Length: 100
Image 1 (cartoon, rainbow, N blue to C red):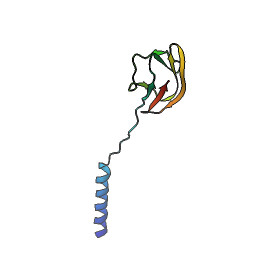
Image 2: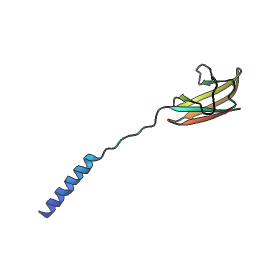
Image 3: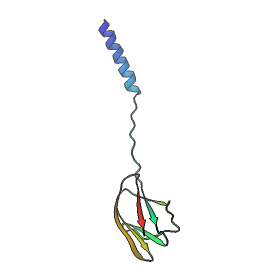
Image 4: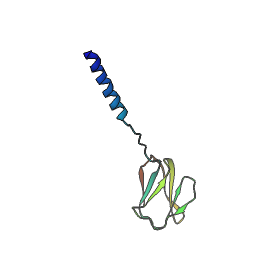
């Protein structure tokens, strides 16, 4: 009788605590960012083989969204390529590219 009541209390306690436990899954955002620093006067940005985008008055605090994965980053000034880098972007990570 004693063992049965102890077993019953343990069973009830296990059910109550097990049902109250709620585990959530947290995933990183699937967006990465690229930040350009340095001499940002009259530059244009090209990501992979997409069109070249002229950047209007960028600052050192400006970030641009980019999908995670491997990307070829090219920075141009007056039509001349001044930066060419292959970068791997992970989710919710900001990579900095210094422009000279």
